[in-house]
Image (cartoon, rainbow, N blue to C red; front, top):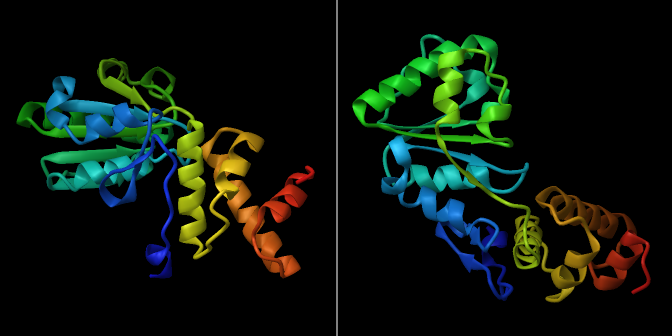
Length: 220
């Protein structure tokens, strides 16, 4: 793929982890935990953070370390049976009411058999829509690690990766120009990259600081 051939000088303070995951102060703790499940209290862990922060990527890094099954919370049914000793349940914020009892039994099954349970969500367990008391108590007793909003270095790295994913090679200093001018969030990084790509296609101009300044309605 062309995107894999693009080369960037990553900002200081950002390192590459497995599968091109960018590690900085914003996510270093979460990265360290998913790559060392022996540290998980009670062999379970919850990763929380905003949309686009890399929770699913972290889950797949964890899954690469041992046989793991990944399922969305919304897809849990009463007849679901895990096919691996490690289970990832994504988007626990969206756990449907009928899935609460199956989730409770899954938790107990993995605990009894010495399995690993990794859960992802935007919010901490106390904010999940769980009404089954036994499940709520077990979820709230889980260790939680949070992926914070990106620091400037991580925000720049994320934008550069998003450009690469679109097979675009912007000027080397463009991400540094954009980082202090947009909201410090993963969603904002994705939005500005998409908007610049669209604007470049619409105007026939190359992606540049001048084009970014026009998009942001700021003088360059």
